[in-house]
Image 1 (cartoon, rainbow, N blue to C red):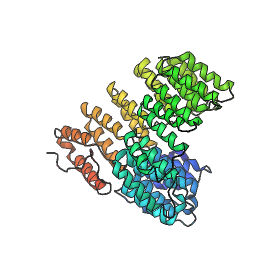
Image 2: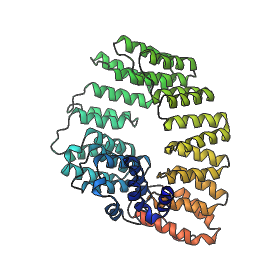
Image 3: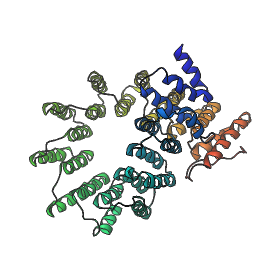
Image 4: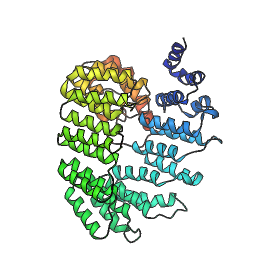
Length: 503
């Protein structure tokens, strides 16, 4: 009876928030409250309705603790929620006198905003926090901001952002740690030309340290240029640079990814001779490397060697070995490893599922994928965007648009906003089969969550609707929602802007 009442409450949009108070009365565990609040925020029809009155009515001060807000923001991040919703929640919490903001909560809010390229809102937030809670500004928050600016904006804009950071971090003298953050922003984007320019520009102001050298080495590794990486490494050691465990790890990873497994093993030996005991991460990297060259025996040997060195394999190590089996088209041993993970009380994560789905697609087709998909659903596991998009494409390409709709519904029911690529694939499959009503419904659900439609899907939908006059009202409503959303979000290329006319 209790569960039925909860379902009835949640099924009605206007009553969803009332369910929070009801559920809280029957649970002393805060996690269900976190899940429920996050789902309600994600489902909220923003900007059709403002969030602030909703927060005031259904988030009592007793519920707004530091940990609770951190967890809800983390859930919103995982669910790919609209960044403005996360910002509203964080600002609402800040207004409560008993709420103690943390760097973690601030960084999660910032990350959600910059991931969606809401840079002006992100700057507004940083400047507000710089004045009200300057201790929350850390090199991590700086890294979150600069890495996305380096990815989506120009070299000059990134340098301007670094200078703006100095003004935001008022009273803090920027040194080599802050410079390393800027350098890493370019290196992780494989922009080594820009990284060199930054290094030369600021060399006199910031004296490089070991971390600076490792960041540059990482950049060469990320760019895939092993020769440049090794030239840089040997030049630095000649100038007195002392390699660290991280230095060896970067070089091992570079050779593994290029398929030069014997060279990776050689550096592995060098690392041990230099007095650095191999870590769990290094073993995991080598297992991945063995998988790339299809050497199952060596991968298994490395996995067993970890235990001999009193290193307990974690989820990452298991995933590396599972990936090796999948690359060698050995699906059964991979599934056995997943079962072993469960026996050892290791949580199966998205990488595990994604890897096994790839193996099932290559080895057992739609039947094998569907069997694993059902197991995932039974375990109430919600796949991340990368896996959701892959599954959606596989279902639709194989003529199972019904499973695509089922996956869409499962993600929505669990408070996740499917990735835009997943919507593009699903709507294409639905329209090509004449299922315009379902395609329209999915698009409206997506926009209602505060997400933009791609221009390609919008044009395709319009083309099919030109042949179906009975959907004119739904089309007008979708366009009205798109227009209203555009008034709240920053300009963006490749997204629909709305047009009330089908003709």
